[in-house]
Amino acid sequence: MTTSTGSEPSAAAPLLDLQGLVVAVRRRRRLWSSMALLGMLLGAAVAVLMPPPPTAVTKVLVAHQADQPNDPGTLIRTDAALLQTTQIAGRALQSLKSTQKPEDFMKAYAGIGLTNNLLQITVTGDSDAQAVAWAKALADAFVADHVQRIQATADAEAKTLLDQRDRMQTELAQVNKSIGDAPQQSGPKASANTESLYARRAELTARITDFGQRAAEARVGTPQLIAGTQVVDAPRTVRVSLPRTAATNAGVGLVLGLVLGLVVAAIGAVVADRPVLRRDIAGSLGVSIISELPRRSPWLWRRKRIRAARERLTASLARTVRGSAEPLSLLELGCARGTSLIALELAGALGAQEPVVVVDGLPGSQLSGRRPKPGDPTVVSGEGGAAEAHQGRRIGVGSVAPGTAWTDLQYLGTRTVLVVRAGHGSVAWLHTVARQLADQRIPVVGVVLIDPDPRDRTDGTLWDGPRSAPRGPSERGALQNGGGTSHAVQAVGEGRAPTELPSWARVPDIDQEAR
Image (tube, rainbow, N blue to C red):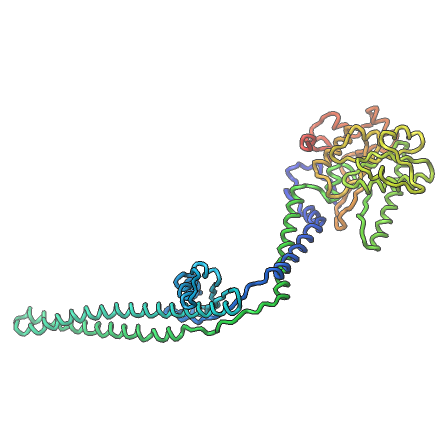
């Protein structure tokens, strides 16, 4: 059981009530379900009204000189990036004999690496034939460019090795010449010099041989790389299934619309700060919830349940009215039509024993514009309520919505029952209603909650503090004489600090906040 925590400091309250947020979002299911449905319809409409253009795809096997088994895909990503260059686009356009700009042509295709050595090229065109032709030209241009770069790299490497070999051959010729001149000299120094020349000649001969072999190997590996780079999947058109595309787009739109709707509903619930739980509504008004009435439902089995709930509510209110000679008023917040029906049913239940007059104080035409039926009670306007009071019991119907004339509420009834729709009024306005009713000395019998959340398991009864509404004539007279004033009303009249008031009246500066 959840009880009120009015005695706890405000700092202990959570910044975000997750339970209230979940309930508020669930109550706005029409919003996010409508957005999800709209997203699904838009996704399907896009697939039908904006079909994908003709598309062709081809695959190219790319051989790299620096291929490694543990390559993370850097080389193939480099090839995909090279595909999106004006050089390759220009070569493809040149082979197609097209005057289109390479920059514009690059927007019609894309490349992606499927593996470390497999590149997929996707091209879109105005027709299937055009897309296939463009894909073939791009694949051929890419292969030619890749082969050219391989040959250029191999030629550059071989040329560098051969240049080194030529320089060493020149040096070897000088060494040989020095060795040929060595017999003309004699002595230990000449002998040592001759030995060093022979050692240098041997070293240069070995290095010249090595550079020659490396240059040959550089050229030998090039044909393998050239042969390994080829088109392995000829260009072909991509067949698109309209039903499958529409279903996919509808599913994506459904998810996006649902997520967007949930986000909007959650943000709206947090910003609006309108309580939907029983405990929050009772705590904000400072009055316990005495009854509930579910919202209207199109299902037959729920209609019987709602009809039974209305009958129980009418019987309970009838007992409350008969228990006192003071007139009772029903004050609505967000449910004028439901309150007018409750008042008419209550008047009908009381009319079997005594005359009943319903005083219409609602701002709309829920009662005044209603066509009277046989057996309906007498309905008078707020101005004629006092004149009709002597004819029988009086039941007033009014509103506590923004713009209410608070001083006129006491003419509708000296006691009142608040009929509040869950999630309609903000916390600040509920506090304002409680404070204004306390200032007008109108005791509140209880709250009838309209359209409560069916999964709400919180308690709408206030367990701390005294009763906020005197029930009988003796209490009413004691209230007027000042001897039996309830603690809540007395605290408001004395202007005590908010911490000295019960939980329902602890609303500092709420009038200023409501304005």
